[in-house]
Length: 317
Image 1 (tube, rainbow, N blue to C red):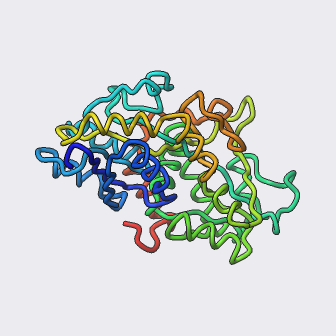
Image 2 (image 1 turned 30 degrees about the vertical axis):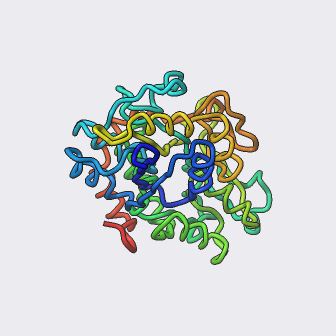
């Protein structure tokens, strides 16, 4: 029945949200229809369909993707009760999009190569040391988290600092892989020492039985902090099932689902009432000072800088 279904465009490829969709179906009787959309195409897709939206909700793996099209009037603002308690960086200024899990950037450490945690990197600059020469990995421009991380560094620490850092990584023979999955696979398969990654990647890989650890960067009282991205949800303006779409947003932000995502995938809860478990709570993460609008503005120059530094591999454009 049309009033008992929900159509979702998902730019989130992995980890899979099928358990969340299945739970919602069972609790509500609503059929959840999910269409995967390549994460670089989600913005153009909803803009092209804004006069006759085919979906009710957009889920994607980046704040940048939704903020980039927010001015095109494709989203219906929804100040969900949980989101009203958010820090401003976790939502659009007008509540047009909301974060539903946070993804802090860390270093994934190969514990077979660096068994002593005292030797793990503690600052980004540590990755330029000779011991990481030809032994450090990072995902390419295909991954929005890579672009967002380096753009946030350009905003918070300055373009000149970013230029020096990228040059240092290149000189240290950083290995760049097409995706986050390829990067973490290479870490263990090729015996590398470390990889720039999202904290969730570390948890998922560890739970699969890999000897990896999570090294937090720049978390001291005088340090600049690490970049924190987020996966987002937005109600599409003029959609067929707006009430059901908002109901699903509330479900996604509920304590139950937030704790499921923390336990299954190591994702950082954004609902302050949810227990983070073994995941570092959001209020204990020192973040880079980089507003989303400034990060978005810095993206074009950052992409060109990374492309010059060798980050355009595989499917990167």
